[in-house]
Length: 131
Figure 1 (cartoon, one colour):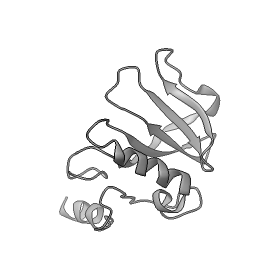
Figure 2 (cartoon, rainbow, N blue to C red):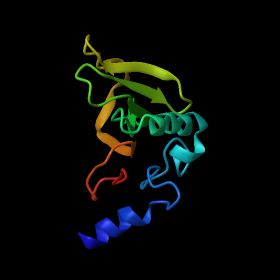
Figure 3 (cartoon, rainbow, N blue to C red):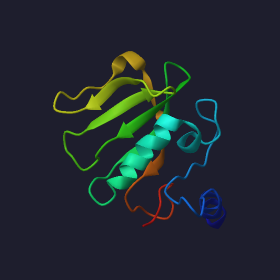
Figure 4 (cartoon, rainbow, N blue to C red):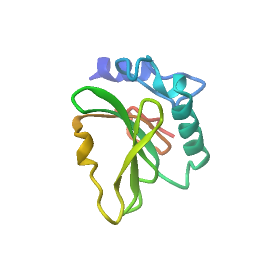
């Protein structure tokens, strides 16, 4: 348990504690939150919303191995939307909303989903910061 927690915490940057990423290469880069400009800008926008929304970014795979991202604009809204993006920042579809969209045409591997950013407080064991 201590080893796992120290591994999670060692991946945190002191100057940007909310931009954690502990995991394998995704979309061809070792830290997509910093190296993919569109994703970094999305996270920076969410930082401006800190305290007003519960927004998050998760990595995932789809179509049997392609890398993608699930962007939750506000997890606190019952009919909120999650954007499903490819590595280039193209919005492929939206999930949720009043219509309950699921994006079945992209065959998202739900076991591959891993949260890499959030703008709200969570527990120590999670990847997101503890503010």
